[in-house]
Length: 254
Ligand code: ATP
Ligand code: MG
Image (cartoon, rainbow, N blue to C red; front, side):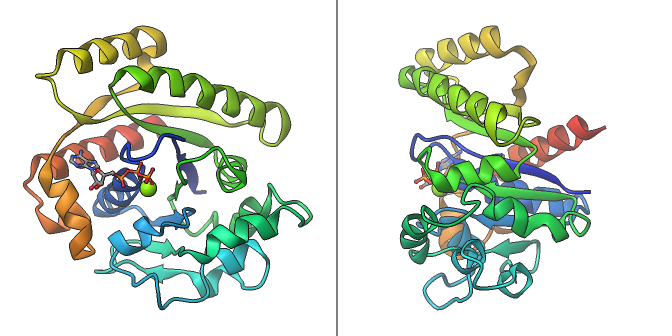
């Protein structure tokens, strides 16, 4: 039975997509079967997995609107490491169309129903907004993984996100958990970073992953090659950090 993780933070550019791609690849290296769902009209998880977002159809858009079966939309990532349900700009329009559709918050959950036996992990790369797409991600998920940069405003944004998760819990998905908070683009030389990181540990305790993702240029370079960093530069600090994260995530299951 797959564990479904929504990777979410309404703040942009905190490392959601980088985490989605590299955790998918790292779990695959640990012999897990992984589906990565791109739920962002930017389609960055699609491109970063080596899939040309401009030329593909069907995508998650047709699946959410009930125009395609999910199996016909799933592709292999570049080197076949993991499966991808791709997205592109059509999804932005799809979000508007969804508003008038029955069960609009449950579309993704219902689409995944028959796939739960096929995968060990399903990772959902959410867009940088607490929108209907993200609500679909939260409704389909067992837990939320929250990547964040350790800077002052991060804590403020976290309160809104935690409130949203509580609302979803009391309405659409009573079992939704916070899987963990992931410190990304971490620079220990920066004293504010260290302070925010300490505050996070004080507030959230063992909900904060022990693994920290360092700022590492190889992580930023890998997507332009359509590869996860574990394939692009397996010995980089970024690759080693995501392999550690995969081990920590797998440990949460047992
Ligand atoms: P969005 O909110 O737009 O979807 P995001 O939260 O998915 O953004 P990413 O796209 O993963 O964030 O990362 C934002 C930028 O920072 C990208 O250019 C990415 O390559 C870079 N980046 C992410 N993590 C790291 C890191 N650990 N070290 C260096 N660069 C990073
Ligand atoms: Mg993203």
